[in-house]
Image (tube, rainbow, N blue to C red; front, side):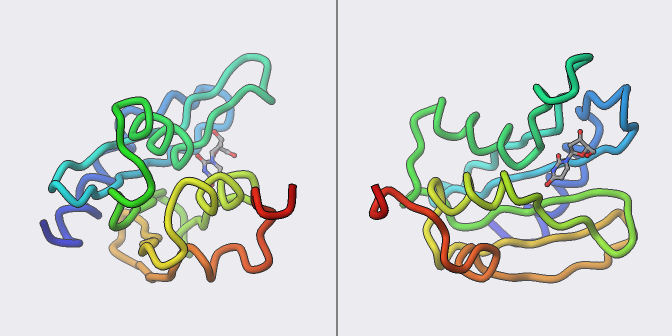
Length: 132
Ligand code: THU
């Protein structure tokens, strides 16, 4: 499964964004080591703080289907903004617990601007279960 296929899926996931308040669509796609791709989109709520970001939607969906961090190869995150919108702090915290630190993160937009990083680069010095 190519990274290109993964980024295409993240762009496709934008279509499922439920964002009537911000009108800002975000799509995410996660590549599993069995070749499966799981998508997520941002899902907003009239009680704004209950909004779920695309990255967390995708990760919670993957875990809900039985996948674990060792099954995840990469996550792509798509928006329509320039430069491409990178994951918020809350998502970085969740990503750092639910994905391996060496897993790939691809951030892109619909104009095909993109950059690639790693989970450990998104949130250095993360709070983790080792701190508890
Ligand atoms: N959003 C995401 O889905 N992911 C992020 O990492 C940043 C923000 C969403 C939340 C909200 O629906 C919209 O973008 C505007 O903040």
